[in-house]
Structures are given as structure tokens and as C-alpha cells.
Length: 171
Image 1 (cartoon, rainbow, N blue to C red):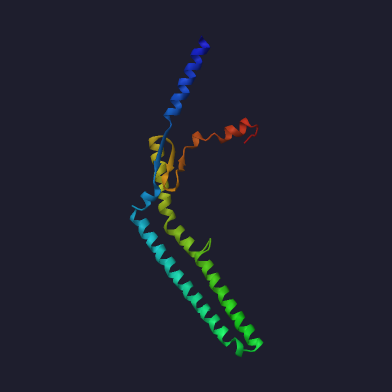
Image 2 (image 1 turned 45 degrees about the vertical axis):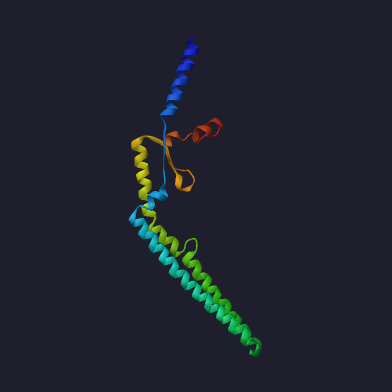
């Protein structure tokens, strides 16, 4: 009988602890779109990207014009002149692709500018979420802007090391 009462007590305790964990959600897209500095930064990035895109498109139009002129003059050129013109077009195209990569590539100017302007605002939002989580004793806060991803998790509820230990791996 004592054992049965102990099991019931443990069951109620475990249920109480599970219910004590609080969960919340935020919509970071909603939050960011209501921060004036974020909107201004986004507008600045859009303008910059538009200007660079226009520059790239203009350069590609010049290359297209060079190619059409080459096609029109091709019959009048010597082999050496044809080769030189083709190389000139190819080199110009490489330059434009390099410039495009410089502006829009993975570590390009637009990415760096985005990091400079947007990341501090996102970090500030994340710090606020963390503070709210600590104040409200939340176990998890989800971000609904991108499909219910966990934006914050309380590390005290992370059981990864326990699983590894149970599997026989020491950390």
C-alpha cells in the first residue's frame, strides 16, 4: 500500500512539474515590422540592392551590345581580331559576374550591410525575448513568423546530456 501511495505521489509530482513549464510564442516578423529603425534599415538595403542590380543590368546590356556588334562585324574581321573581340567580351562578362558576386554573393557587400544594419536590431529583439522568458519562467518561446521554430529554450530543460549518458556516452 505504501508503494502504491508513493507511485501516486510521484505521478502527481511529475504531472505538476510538467504543467509548471510555461510556453509562449512571438511573431518576430510582426515585431520587426513595427520597429522604425528596422523598417528604415530594410528600405536602405532595398535601395542599395536596387542600385547595384541596375548597375549590373546596365553592364550586361553593354556586353549584349558588344556581342551583337561582334556578330555584325564578324565576317569582316581577321581570325586574330575575332579572337581578341571574343576574349574582350568574355573578360567583360567575367568582370560583371565578379562584381555581381561582390555585391550579392554569400559574403558580399549586401550581406555585410545587412549584418551591420539588421543584426543589431534582431539581437535586441532576441535579448528582449530572453528577458521575458526569464521573467515569466518560460521553458520555451516559439517564433511563429517562420513556422513555429523555437526562438528561446531554457537550458535547464535540455536533456541531451542525459540521453547521451543513458546511451553510455560520457560528456
